[in-house]
Image (cartoon, rainbow, N blue to C red; front, top):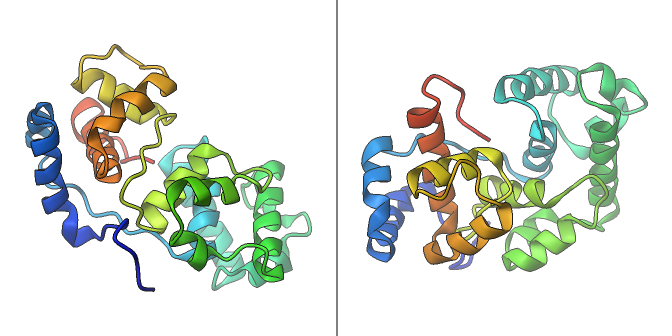
Length: 217
């Protein structure tokens, strides 16, 4: 899929980090502490959004375990393959009933043409978030994380994420858990590279503040 200038690929991380340091020199010690950003590939389309829904409010280990069961049961994880097993079986594979229902709504929206994730990935962030959060069960965190990791959007900062709040609070001396609204305002200084800033602070959380813990989200 051809992307517009508002998107960043993994190969551009180094350049984006250099740009971030020019914007905010206080990030230099954070970058030095984390080293190269760990590789993290998103999943395209329905698969990516579905994994993000699975990962809501659970640990990375739990999300991977549930996802492994879903993929083993469905084979290629598509809207059609999920709907084929969704008659109450989703929760028994480790999903809550609410998450299973959300995946049904997403799969049905894609099947009906009401939701086109390829098109949505090319939209401005605010419009894409608005369209995603229309679907019951998809909140701001899910929409932002999907756009950041799976759609490759350059300028997303999920300020409500607990790990980001802890990491930015510690690194930037903002207190233990900055308020999400305050953190979202603070992160404006890193535009238009807020997605890479988020990647940086998730790495800082997982490698420096909580070494040995699975990287988040």
